[in-house]
Length: 391
Image 1 (cartoon, rainbow, N blue to C red):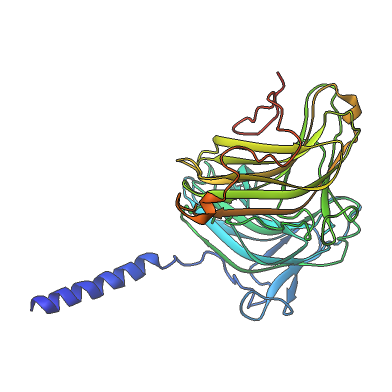
Image 2 (cartoon, rainbow, N blue to C red):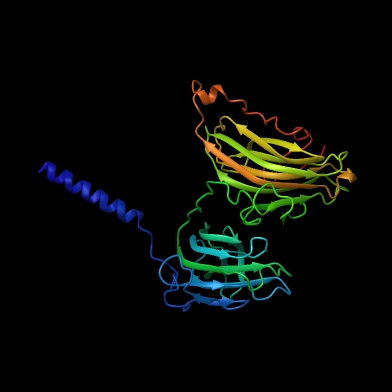
């Protein structure tokens, strides 16, 4: 009898475990477009097309293309879901794109809360974006609680392109499929690897912050078709700082090795520098440690590398950045250019002290001596914005 009871207990435990991990009912209607475009509404731009040439599952997906560029292009395919103030929400959709990598077309998933009058209230929440030639990608977002006066949550797959972007005009599409939503709070899965390492998919995956936006270039490149370029714009009132970055999941006790090939075309007397920076952040985005290495003047393609032998306690992510810097008042730095290509990031379990790898290691928790100088001491990375502050 005891054996029978124990067996029954195990069976029940397995059943309850299965039930506990089963997702709630999907709040989207016709989430995979297997019933055409029914239940979905079109907002702005050209209407969506029911497509059978690309689909994440089933037989169909919804596709959009850039219809005009005489002004910024914006188009949504959306559903409204009933929600009450304070309720959480999680949503995801699969998307893929076939645009020119050098174009500006971007697509993503967006959440807006609406009041009883149909007005957008609170903060708009966006997923990560895709563009260029991106295979099927899971896009996720979440909201901890709907704001006061919320009656609906509008979830939209969207497409955007910059004014005048002829490279994206009616060339390429974004496809959406397999939407899902339910009323729970669930953080999106973190990025676990460096994406678009050689800029062969344009500037997609890279977050462009501060200074003038980066541009994609075909000449010069270190390898492949494209490289990224940043230029010094102005140094009249403050230090100049501009960067491309990605955040990658990392934990304590890991070895981190980062590299990029960089090239500079600058006045040899200028103080402007191009470089690589890795910062170790905790879960609250506080910088635990940061390392940089730079080049300047007229330096041909050169590999810049940084290594951390063991990430500190509390590490939750690595911020990988390529950047361009010039000090305030250094006018001969203006229009100086930095080029970046073939980025790499490896996060591994460090070798033991007795291993051959450890015995041959030459780089540790200091910035690698690969460039010609270290980042100037007067640069301070703000924990929240990584802004450059002069003395």
